[in-house]
Image (cartoon, rainbow, N blue to C red; front, top):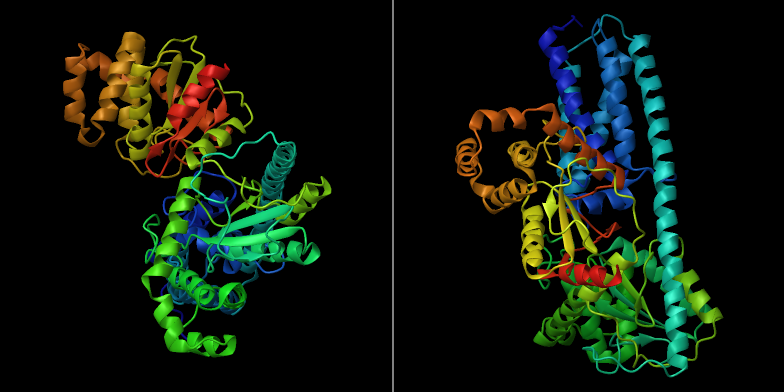
Length: 602
């Protein structure tokens, strides 16, 4: 075979393709290791479905595939740079294998209807690299230097990523276990209050208590488990296995019932993506079985659905109905009727009221299980509850609080954090206020604008509260902590706010900050110039301050502080040095209750 062209353009093109793959894989690895959350990769997203599912990890060791992909792409880049005389046959075989693996993952993403943009970018970059590698034919069949470079780099990168993974797992598992232990203590304390007659029945929406329609185990149980689930949710299946293990071990002391929250747009208006396309029909099938055959029929259908991961075709359902003893026409008519839909929709609205933001959401004796993803969390918690000797009870007093109360409780449960220094404490409200709100955000980011507008409005009507905004513009031009450029005008906005404070003090900062948020969508160089003039600043002096080292350092200080505190998404809120996990819930604001609570407590 004659040697083909090995031009600089080919070498540069291959390197650019690898840089695309490296960048996408790095972002997925960063997401896993606790970096800033990626757009489109939040809880319940296609990214989350892929990366947390069985195809997202290496079998046996459980490492994210993104780690191995990143290690391979970095190693391939080293090999590519070492291939000064073209790509040898053996290296080309390795590259072809990598392309074949990428092809398999692309097919998997399509068939699972879970297209992750970062995964796609990595695989597209790999395909481009393979195509260009085929055109760089080496002078020798085996060139050892590039192969050694790939192998050593892959091994070192894998080792470093593995060490980071081990550390991250330890941190996450410790937090899960801490939450689980706190939950067990809360359940035991609540059971003792009930046994002593100290708890009155609360006014809640569940007449007769919080429980599902059908129940495994006795009506009166010492441990009453309620699971809000989705038949197509992998975590739900795993937690259900733990629940069934507990039931088998304690058949007279434990009960289990089910409610539904399908991640499916066919019946759930609160989800944006159809992550589990058959989730609604699976839930309705289980309820139809219960309507036609009672508890035993419901349980048979429930087990059949979980075994099939909630997925079935028309022919598979027909076969299943025959096996389970249902008459097909009657079952289909019942399943497709209004009553099953109304029951699923009722469960969905209850879950929203409770503050659900992922499945499964599990309750024991009316108290939400925190730390549900700790090792055998449900099994160990129920064992601890039973060991405390609570009396068997019905679900009458099991009345979980609404989601807004849950948001406040989640904030109260957070440890106090030492806030990193802030050289320029521009803010709103009295400096000695009892309640102190800190928002890290991007003045061009819509959710940051919502939180900021609410906070400033709330301060106008309530005293005793101090609000400080700290910058995290998602733009590497002024924020070295982020590799992404999501908001091209974010640095302009942050610099303008800081410059106003530097030149005019807190009052000038407040005015400029408010204008930047309220006119976020109209911000341009020209509209900013008009605002600068309206505030009485000299343009030359103001723009010189914007580009000064003082302003740049103030922004970098805020960005570094957010990173040290573990920022994952924007806005990033703290009240009285406690992280606020959720400041609003499906449009209902919880931040007001948190601030009022903080003002009373401190």
